Length: 115
Length: 112
Image (cartoon, helix red, strand yellow):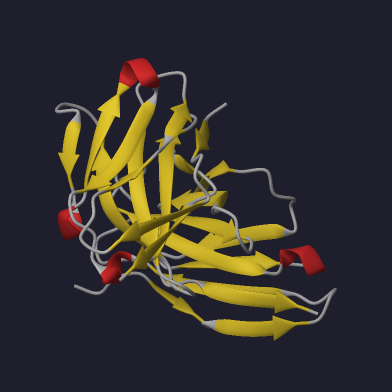
């Protein structure tokens, strides 16, 4: 069965500092991998996705993520964090039976940005 | 281009009642999925509809049911509401069953 682990429940980063959010997944085949961001009381916004090809993927808002098959990881990075990046971040793996795709989400990492 | 819209944004129901939540998919998207997000948790997959047929379901009881209409909008129905059904219900649409999903803002359901 698919699963996603986000080991950090909370992370606090100073504004302007770099950020890395960790994500490990378990999936039997080549996974589809996603990062979503959620502001309080809001839906999920897609930051970036990995389906195949280049293992370093670029997303919106200056985020990037690297797929490492040997480590079953898909960590999210940003070189310089802005106060507006404070939110909940979810990693998800896609897959499922023939003809449909369900996303399996991690429990999320809450990012706090200090001045 | 209109994104995914959900209605209502909030509602309060009493245990044992029934509720219907609505979702309009993004233009051109024929696949709709529903997720339940309990407080402090990641979203959990309920089911997916593709061209008006349910084509995948998560670990939710039969009292969770849905519909997809010819215009690809969708409804989620929950019967015999329980307190644990209190959650944010998210609808997501995608161009196909295997492309990225775009989420609506969710419906916050509170069961009292």
